Image (cartoon, rainbow, N blue to C red; front, top):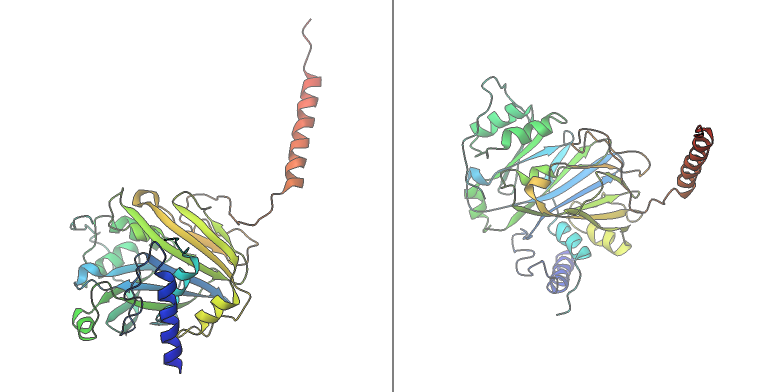
Length: 344
């Protein structure tokens, strides 16, 4: 019965998404549980002081050059395979129904770099995952020694993250295991990391690693928080907030029914959906979040050089404060006018 329910839901998602302009129905959930998503999709959910970070790695049939390194806000307590269709269900939730690389180059890393510390190694299906702790140079050296082909901008990007958190996840497909399990090009393996952290955080700049400055980065970021969050920096033309609303009971029920999603509350969650569509050169920051919606997110976590104004979509305009400031300003103008010496 459980398999039947899952199959019916998969077909239902496929039928609805088929009308959407940005998604292909074929292979939504393959026979081996792998997934296909045309855009990079990530879920950062925050419940009881723990971030649940879910993303998918796409198999391209190659070796080291298709590995990925992702910065993390803290040390995961658990790394496992995510459910088969959590990300697709979120994409379906925000997809309207329609009416009808650069060349690789050698990377120069500091000769004095030490060794990165391997905190965890595990296998998830055909994916080899390593959790590392170290500075940018140390992680870069580890990557080179383990066969990762890093692009020229890797040292700068790794340092950008290591200055704030020295924890990284390196992931790479074992080609033989992938082919033996029937994975084809474009099939993905969803990964679920459980990370205790004061607040959720989503790395965005890493999406531009190895991309030409004018290359367009497209991604979907979903947030599930217990309250409407404040975010930093405020969305721009290239990073837009498309949805900010109470998550429906129907959506949460669907998500909870996927494998490994029982931790998700049955109700009382806020859904935020950010759409990224911007040149790589403009994606020079991350997304910092205050899950309570009451305080300022960390500008350091956002990758900013100085504090900025946090943003919350439904925050009311402080008219009382604004009128008070205008009133004080008007009074000062009158006083200055009266105190100005008159010409004779």
